[in-house]
Image 1 (spheres, rainbow, N blue to C red):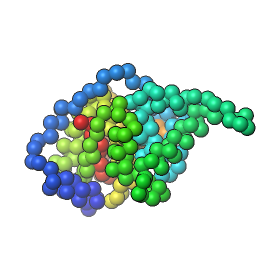
Image 2 (tube, rainbow, N blue to C red):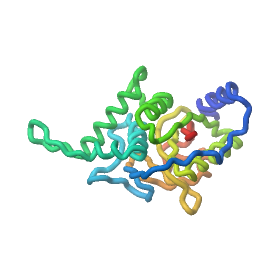
Image 3 (cartoon, one colour):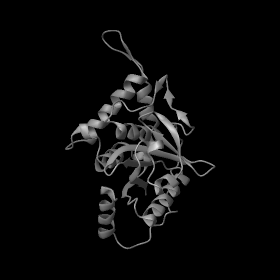
Amino acid sequence: MRTVSALGRAWQRLISRPVVVPVAAVSALSGDRRPLVAEALGEQRHAGARLDQVDATTCGSAVLLALATWADPEELGRLEVREQDAAGMVRGFAARFDARQREIHKATNLFWPQALGTTPWGFLRWLHRNAPGAGRYRLRFVDDASEADVDLAIRQVEAALGARRPVPLLVGTVVPRHYTLALRIADDGTWRVYEPTSGSVRSLDPALIRARALAPVLGFDHLHTVFLPV
C-alpha cells in the first residue's frame, strides 16, 4: 500500500530535472543558537512549562515555534517577557508559548481549515517569512514503499543533521497527520526527534522508516514529507 505522498514524490520526479542530489552539500549555519527544545531525551520544559502542542491541531505550529526560537534568540526572548494585564494577572512564558502557537497556526492557514492542521506549503511559507535565520528549506515528499527513495531520504536528512540543521518530518497514516522535528544524530546512529504531542524528545531508529513502523515513537507509521535545508 502506498501513501498519498508517494503520488507527490512521483510528481516531484516528473517535474524535476534528472540530477543527482548532493546529499552531503548542506550549508551549516553560523551564529550562536539558544534552542528552546534541547537535544537530550525526555520531556522538554522551559520556565516550568511543558513544551507540547497547545491543542490537537497545532503540531505544525509547535514545530515551527521550536525552529523559530532556534533560529532567532529574539523569538525566545519575546516568549520569556512577563507582563501584568489590567486585572493584575501576570502573563508569563506558558501563556505566551500557547498563544504564539495559536498565532502561528492562524498565519499558516490562510485558505485551509484550521481544524485540519497545517499544510506543508503553509508550513514552509511561514518558516521562510518569519524565521529567516533558520535558512531556506525545500519540501521533499517520500515514497516509503520504495526502498531506494527511503534510503535517499534518510541520507538527505542525516546530511542535514550532520550540518546541525534541524529537519521537520511529517508523518501519518495513508495521509499526512503529524509534524515532528529531527534535531541531531546520536552516537548510536539513532535520531533525536522532538514529538510535540508529548512535548518530549525521543530516540528514532531510521530502520523504522524502512519498516513503515514509526507509530511507537512518533504516533503514526508512515513518513510522508521531509523538509530539507538548502
